[in-house]
Image 1 (cartoon, one colour):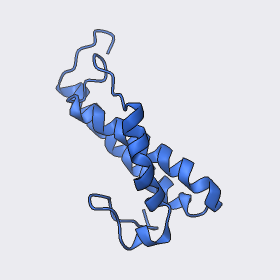
Image 2: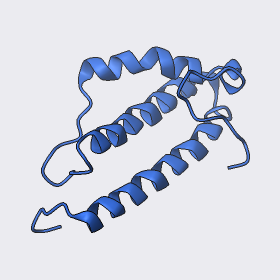
Image 3: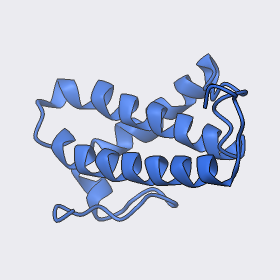
Length: 106
């Protein structure tokens, strides 16, 4: 890591960490519905924005040592309507295309 070398071991480690983080985000999403309604949107938007950072790391071929995984202001703003929808009960049964299935079991 100190040499900033992205080799096969580093990529596998990043893939593992990203997968693990997404599982945590999925578990956290279940908790959003337990929050007061006025608290749901900021929490869901944070989950979605940080999830986008994981996407950016993947787009950078997992090279987080030499390339910043950055989500710009307008991209963050564009997330808000999707985050709002995800805070609604209906999103559990009618998810946004591409969303992972909602489960209270995981």
